[in-house]
Image (cartoon, rainbow, N blue to C red; front, side, top):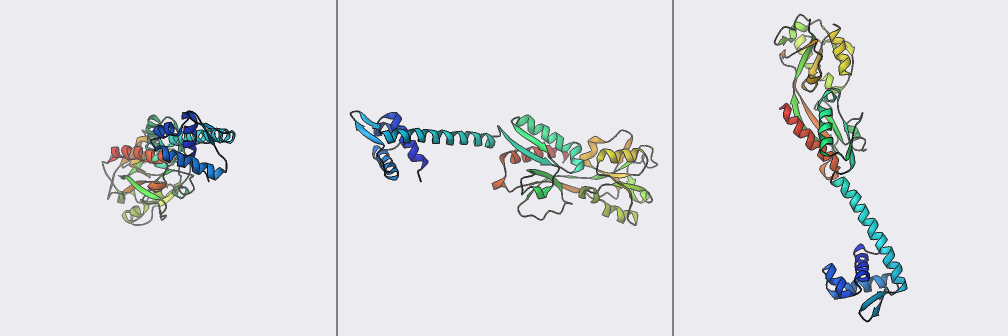
Length: 293
């Protein structure tokens, strides 16, 4: 197997016309250059240079070897440049997934900030979960501590902690309260979602209400939930991340007792195997999350 360094020495000798000049250019000794060429000639089984009055010149076989070496080194340089573009975030692709309420503002704002910083890197918002981290289907997955993540190959980076509030129609009998006692919501119809980040507060509700809440509607779309509440079909729970996307005809109120808080985390591959673009997105998410502390 020919070594890349031997090919570099071969090309340098050909371009400089002598072992001593090549040695100076490569910061080597002249004997070291001679040994490299001798070793290369031994491996290929033919002489690559012949002596001339002012140094060396390639043999016929040497000319072929030099042309091939230049082509190989050129391809290697091209590969390094293309891969370097990924490492330096001048190109690439990062796939992000998020739970429904994070998609109302937090994830889009993170994507905007990332795109401003790294315009050459494509960003995709995909429908995927933390289990797709290993397969490469997603690079950064926004999750909560209510997701049951038990994979040692997936790292979790804490981003923020948020509260949950009650969402009522603006005309609801309790909409004028500063804080809504949960016990006064007994008998209400609840609008919930099937995603784990929706179901988390229900345990706290059951205790406060003295029984399981009546789930009249299941809807994973935040816009659809709001429409149902505004139509007077029930009440629902909102997390801090969704607060920026609430209709003006709805009332958001904290509760007494307070509903369970949750932690929002980023699921990523371990640092040693994490793509550069994923690490950069994680930095953007961490910076953005500081606004919610």
